[in-house]
Image (cartoon, rainbow, N blue to C red; front, side, top):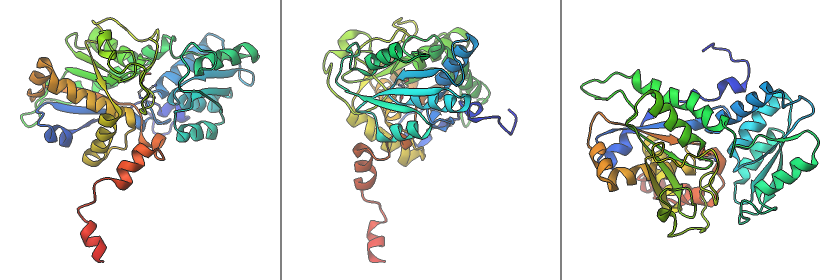
Length: 358
Ligand code: PMP
């Protein structure tokens, strides 16, 4: 890669794969636990990749006109930030429709990048006219040169992960040789990703299973309250319940999410309490400033490794590589109660007694 980049879009992706040795040890896991740390992408999340891919594909098809086009997108925020970044650079206007539950930090980042933000009721069903999807469609009908790139149905969403995130993970694992101290199959044996549109988990599965390791176990993580998990019985317990983790889970099945069990081998449900506790663990044990859905992904990975026979066998293999996608960073949630309550009012530091005496 050249040292001087032309713009922020060239700093999308190429994120590190980082060992989570302290978490693995803490949970008695012998396998290599590895985090794909997506907040290190220039816009701060895994969704930068699809924003860049969708904008570039639309430009290639002649669908975007600089100075005229208005890119409209319903999003939980991160796709919007990626789009606003791309459009700031390329000269398109942006309107983002964002459910109320999504953080003020995301709205601030969007506005800082020049986007308009319209808030929509979180509880609106996806196909209601007042939902983030419904409002985006209405805007598109009424705004000249309005275009929805549509992350829920755009093939460039899973494709961006098949062509970039997946190959990066595979390359990192394959090029790190097995040693007696750190045995490795030199393959991705398990891939764990939380799902929103499902583009990440679907695209990664395709990259890994088609070109690298057909036997890789791909695990999707879906929050309690959502209906993405298969089989559907997994969703029934708390379906429709509200939850605070952002960016994952839906009340409909996005077109880009593969429902084929050959692509996604297993699904795990997680809840807010588990996810937010796991965020704290990732920060305190590994020093990584991840966001809420990264906690869901870690907590889902640990459940699969502990609660299934296949998972338990892999967890005890010293050479197995288990990759977990950490989709965004804490920048998006720094003022949220769930984070502040943990970080400011969490366990007292071991140094508290000494500090009080100074
Ligand atoms: N985590 C966060 C924080 C997200 O914003 C998203 C995207 N909505 C995801 C996970 C899930 O990614 P995908 O849409 O590719 O399933």
